[in-house]
Image 1 (cartoon, rainbow over the protein chains, first blue to last red):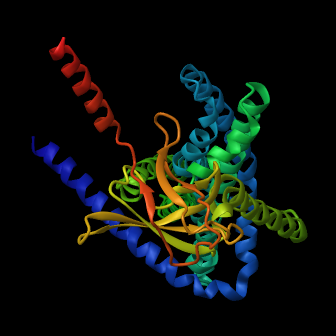
Image 2: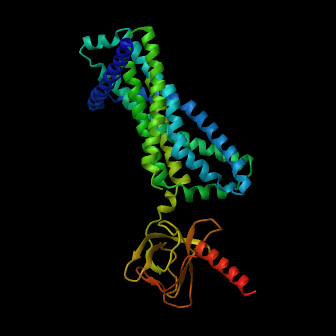
Image 3: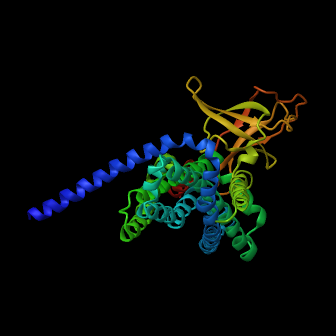
Length: 260
Length: 157
């Protein structure tokens, strides 16, 4: 019985310790961002590995999600003779929810895990300690550019996901199933609002980008510097990152679209 | 390590693709393109009942969209709804005695204002008020009247 309390207490202490460490860590990272301005090439290199290399999976999944949405929604809507509302249905579900959320989940799996593994292995092979010996702050040199690159890439990837998905829905709906071309776009334009729908989607994706990248770089930096520790940290990045995205999505949706 | 030039070019392409996607969402998917033709002139109309008319509802003449509703207010003195609408500048030849009605597009569609031009030679200017208005048809009232009519038919027989 006392053993149980000991385990619970230990788990609670570890949880709060990591929570506090994570927040202190992000403050140090944010404080390191202004120092990046003269070293802009560091961010560019990270934009490549975080953003450009995630592009393929984002485009392919976006296309597939859009095509499936078009096909499924058509089958339901055609019963009510409302197949011309396919455009707004596909566009709204992608721009408001699926674009930011699915892109963020893929981003956590593709880019977040890579960030954690990279930083974790740098720690395991004592490259980070080596930098500290040379009076180079690894948070400024290694972590901050990755964090900024993740926060910039995510909204762009989500926008690409939504745009490609809408094109996928268009190919299936208009190209294969014979929905009217003009009605598809004009109904979409009359239903989708720039401020209400698209900007809120962009805000969502910025929040997701910051949170997922934060979790990824923190897990890497905080990993136990062994092979097993790095593998656990990578798993945690994907699990916590995905859970954070899904949980935050509910909160953000309630805040943004709750009043109508 | 790939050479830096390739990295810079692909990052540039990535950022451009992201911005192009946002641009497509703005112009092709959302209503931003129809918004951008701001301006035009504002006219008001008073209705007893506006039904489900909202801001941004369309204003049509002859079925063609010529403007949008910009605000809906309630006048406590006359107990009427004041609807302000903005008409695109190219449609500046609406006669003074134009009448405004609130219709529903389809059985379940959104509500819009339909303008019927009159015969006067003077045209509506910015700030003018439409005198002849017809309120929205509220479905519950229509059904209620119909049922009431049916019931009284049954009594008289």
